[in-house]
Image (tube, rainbow, N blue to C red; front, side, top):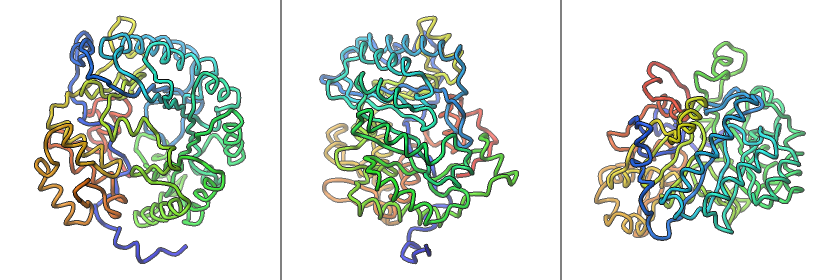
Length: 459
């Protein structure tokens, strides 16, 4: 498919198109002594009335590690899995039994990774039961598991569905076997189709998938065929990611050594994004974040609670990030250190930052625009100010560049702004919270940002 000349107005807005979304704000920078975490987070306090939040459980294990994955993960080892299971259940118990956690209501539960489906059906159910037994999970809560086609079996999906899971998110990445070979995927297209049928057979009526674009040697037509395939299969939620090449991954090394072709140009990447967006919207999907498209009513509630509504996110597991009582925190990434702290009855947080009112306003703009817009009534209701009273200069500059639009109801990303949404969101980071690409990736692995110094990353 030829590049559409009408897309040229979307090119060259920033020097690089940032592939990493705003996942947490403020950026955690302070190491907190283990004995101080509970008090610093205010877990002994009473939460606001009718406090509704979300729970995230990070499962760091994978049957095989994807060559492109920059997140905290490790190959499956039985001894470490046993250690992890005991530690994560202990962590859930500490948070959920605290005055703050016990009086909070949980409306969304997400198990991510890593790959939760690398665990046995029994362990997946055991983790879910631990959350349900300890937290006040609402009867209508959205309970979601991520999984890989290589390890997500019918038996596992039936087991978690019977325990109350009602949403499944599957890392398909591509239906194209040539692209899958480039990425050394652990499943092929046949298994991708099978697992989606099995999800329906297991009783899931809310099925999401991840798709990646701008893969090595991928053409526009190959990419759009992936999107069309997802639409034909009736997938409820489709998340589209551009391939991010990070230096400590095997993918980076293989491209550098010429074993895998490089990704396409930024212009091709933008074209692929715009054409997928057009196709999905024509098919009735609603774009509700920079990279999420869903049939109406099938949005990821975890994402809406944390990013749009600024609600608490109780996070568990190695390198998990959470936001509780305005404290942004990241857990120890090393499973031994994570477990050791919990064996001593300490929470496993290793780095955190408290959001005062000003930083909370920065965070609402940065995280809210990831979800395409910030409602004025929400901002003023929370802080008592109009966004322009705090960020007038930044908003005016982004409007002048055609990246933001404003009216009496909201401040939103424009059509150009959505394409460059990850860049635009970070314009609202405070000076104290500016962060390099390298340090953000390090934090995703549960490592100190300083450890990223000198590494070159390519988006």
